[in-house]
Length: 444
Image 1: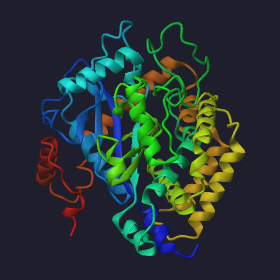
Image 2 (image 1 turned 180 degrees about the vertical axis):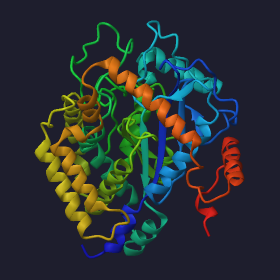
Image 3 (image 1 turned 90 degrees about the vertical axis):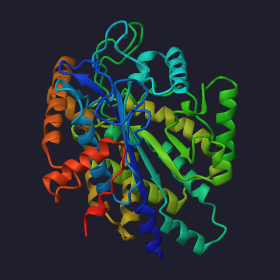
Image 4 (image 1 turned 120 degrees about the horizontal axis):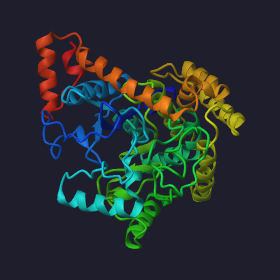
């Protein structure tokens, strides 16, 4: 591996986060309060939004070149949102919703605009309302401008879209590993599932990432951008999908709102829709979880290990494997333990031969420990600590929600700690108005 500079640019990819979470009341029920009035109108705010449901807040960070900076943006956005919640209102730190009413009357579709509302009504009617109440973390990852310049300088005919397809296929092939490592939904709470639903009677790794969780069963082709676009459009025409945006694949190829832009402008980045909220992380996602995505992205782009002509069948098989892992007991070693270690060995060797802007070797060591000991995974930690008593877990999640709220609203503005108290208040007021503020601009 001679071109260490190229590897560095791949690893130092742009990364953006989209984190969804529910507003709840002090008893752990979905909040009955409206979108916080102290924030810019939800229809106009670009980085603190309502998602599918009225209680479902979404925080969207700008693309950054470091995980730490991305988490700082996420942190200060958390503070802006949380500081405008009612006194007995919190953010639920778990991807399955809290206890629901039996008639689901507490699940209210967000009314951001007429078109979105009508679309969401259709989805809720066809896909079951409760399934729209799951939340999670999306990680957006893309090549830096520097990496693109380097690649085109080395080979003017390089196919950037194929590099993105390689990474998309890689994440779909190894979704099961990310489900094992960061799955954090061992069970669902009251009135989520219909009585006739067959649900495991033991705590699993990730209900949300299993066939019982999010998704609609449709996966497009990843053999080429053309096939990806054609199959999504065809699924809409055949009413397998209500609209393009209802494509809930593990990985989405991204450019604009219309997938046809991929054909004319190419892939800008990929969106991973894998991670559960990590209840042990105040912001819902750990630095390790994001860095592992960045390391895997670099590996797939640099090694290009897949024959794209034959990937669709492999992806289908990987989906079945992911379902197995998601429904394994939270405290058991995975059936694919040895395969997981082998892949991390490959990442470790890859990272040892490159200049990497984070501690990739250390990360690989920690991941191996998690593979050997499921108690170190989020689901494993919850169940090892609290047992399989759902009421006890629920109470602890509610305690997390209140504790994280107390910490974050009383801490200095994250990313702006060196500024005066008045300047920090000005930063928060600016963010609440929907005006972005660059963290690095405050450091000389």
